[in-house]
Image (tube, rainbow over all chains, first blue to last red; front, side):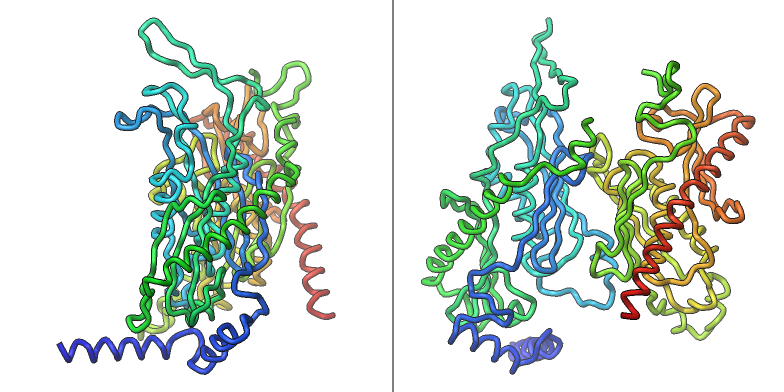
Length: 308
Length: 248
């Protein structure tokens, strides 16, 4: 037992040595945040880095959005298809996620696997936020109960992998859903009581889903008693706990996951409440900004060109 | 619907038989990569990125130069078709023999224009991610790859460009769009060094009579020449800008 522990301690030490910033840098960073609410790049604890969003860039998809948050860059696309709903949920549509690391991220060789979440973990979190917990109202995807429904395939490409990957991905998912165009369909019943779905030829004949109440994911990192959103790499190393929370504008909680990082600083139970509160506030802020930005966005030029 | 209108002689997208689609590119879109280009030919959109040169690790073995002699590659290519790039979503990802074949074509091409002795025991990684596939992916990928290599500052002897061609009712059409691609007509894609009309790779799709090969090849090579004229101007402008930025 004793031997095992010492081996573990050693590996912890090893990790510290390899880590991105050294101990005194960490201390400088932490003290700035704890004493002055001031981060290395001048942001306050709940400030995001500049977020760039563009929608409708991928013409072959039903909806798409590219989000750049700091150095992280994610492209989310939606493809729609008609499917038969499952027997257990006859009035629910399908939602499926896939995440592909772009060649840009997979070709980095010298960089060690950092502590940001791996794409597959991000995929399962997004799947549980938007599908299992009902982040997207799947009843809206139903066409004929028990027979026909929409299936949404979200394909994400990570162009540049940095910190706050989940936050950026969820913003991209929400924006892509906002952009998604569902063709208006007519349902025809044939002699055998089978339903057939017919599409119109008019590309302008579509409806869009109300994405207002779709949740966004906020990952919080805790340094001392302070919670930070959208951390940089340095702050990620210096943080002693983190929590991932998905909420929507109405304050509904869809997902929560605490990361126990480092055994000596756990996530104290009484801090969960505060973390929630903070995450909801940050999420509400970024969510309202996102929605107002999306509504004011003009349709991209290329979008018009293809339909002409 | 006819692929070529019998009244006007125009194709579905309004082009003539011997016209290529518009080419647009944007350099340096991926900040992390050593070289990158977002290449658009009509609605086909490809993101090509270059990383390297890296140490290939070949010198770790004691056989030293032998490895270099055997395989003066110095380049490794990847061709990826995004799930959302086509009309129907591709469900199976990763294991696509077609993509691997395309990657090999690209390697063959760039091996010809690179200087192997300058890149001894080093390796360049090039990957093409197809974001929108609207016909002529391989052709566009070959052209985009050349541009990405140039953006990365990898020395090359000449430019490789690609072009596809098909034949409709005896008339060869250059630069195939997806509507024409869907008809399962005879199709050919070539990777060419246009300055000396040297064909480096050639890929045929769907069966056709051998007599059709000559007109198809002719159309594809002519398409390459047209592409080259556009690309050469783009490259010269880009290099001039890059050199200007360096000196100032």
